[in-house]
Length: 211
Image (cartoon, rainbow, N blue to C red):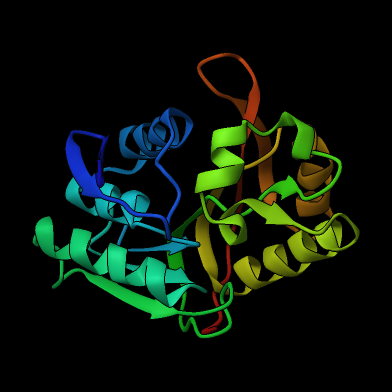
């Protein structure tokens, strides 16, 4: 249909971005409840259609935000949604592999990264998702999975002065929580979604140096 309802608004979507999920909407709602009016800068890593960063800004979380994505096609979709919500003055969109082109510190870093193992998790993926949604936003190679997240968490740590929250795979979150602890993050917790399935990772890190 070319659009999807997400957190009180209609967003443009196409074959280059994921269709926003209720689980992601629930994460946004938790962040709005906790951080509305309390943060300045927010970063959305793997922004896709922009639903996370734009919904947070629109709901009063953060004075300004940055959305990064490796896909230029996805960023075109995010730009359309940014303009529709009249948030161009608050939102910067950057083509970047994770945080490689990101500068500065953020009070809140959020992400819905690719978190499905391309081989061992594939049988858990619905056929329509595998067929119609961008694999770059869904899958990581099994043999690179742990290293990818370790590198990602280190990049987050370098730019975080506040809270990090991400959506993840129920079979991987406990180990990733331990990884965050080893990397020096504090208040690490695994949070369930509305179906009581492990779905989110949340942690904090105070970084007083300029990234």
